[in-house]
Amino acid sequence: MSEGSTGWFGKVGEWLDWHNPQKYADASKQDALLHQTLEMGKQLMGRDVLTGLPGRGLFIEEIRIKIGMVIRDNYGKDDDVRVVGYRGVLDVNGLKKINDEQGHGAGDKLIQQAADALTKNIRQNDLAARVGGDELAFFLVPSSDEGSDVIRDKMKQLLRDAPVSIGIAPVTLGQVRDMQSLPDNDLFDAFQGEPDGVMYQAKERSRETGKSTMFFQAHVDTPVVEIGC
Image 1: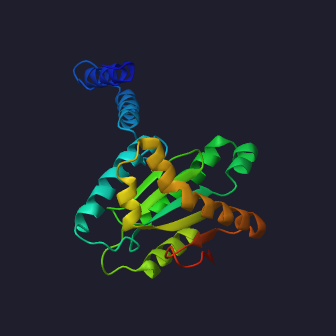
Image 2: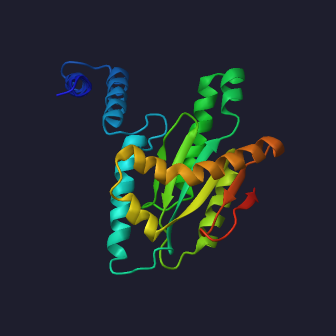
Image 3: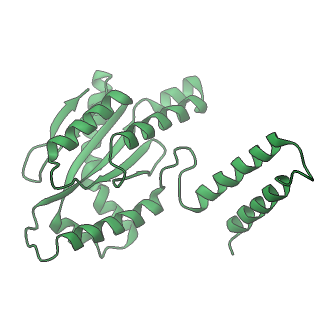
C-alpha cells in the first residue's frame, strides 16, 4: 500500500473516531476532518482537488475508454475520414495577472469558473479534465443528431460564461483507430496536438481583443473559423 493510501485510510479511521458522538461532540472538527478525507480521496482517484475534474492521468484512461466505444460503435465501417468527435483545449485568460494582483485565491476562483462553465456546456457522458495550471481539456462525441453546429453553439455559450480561449479540432474514425494502441504520453500528445495549436491562435486573439475567443475546425478538410463571444 502506498504512503498516500495509508494516509487516506488513516484519515478515514480518524474521522470515524471523531464521528463517534459518545466520544466527541465538536461537529466543526468532524466536518473539517471529513472534508480533508474527501479531498485526499479525490487526489487518490486522479481528480483535481480544485475543480473536481479528472487530472491528466485519469483523463488519458477515460480517452482510451471513449475511443474503444467509438471503435465498437463503428465496427465494420471504413469511412476513416468521418468525424466521430471533437477534442478541445481551453485556457483561462489572464490567470497570471489575477494571481499577481489579487492573489492565488482569486486565480483559483477563475479556474473554478472556467471548469464549471465547461461542465455546464457539455453532456454528462462527454469528457473534461484539468491537464495544467490554467488549461482544461475535453473530448466531445456528439450523438447521431448533433452536428458541428450544435457543438459550436455550446462552446459559444461557454465563451460568454467564462474568460477563456478555446481551440477545437475534429477527430476522425481513422485517427481514433490509430490512437488506440499508442502509449499514454503519445496518446495524450496525439489527442491534444491539433486543438492545442488552434487554442494558441485563440489565446493570441484574446490578448488583442480582451475578449473570450474560440478557434473552431468542423472537419479536417475545412478551415479553422474564429468565433467570438
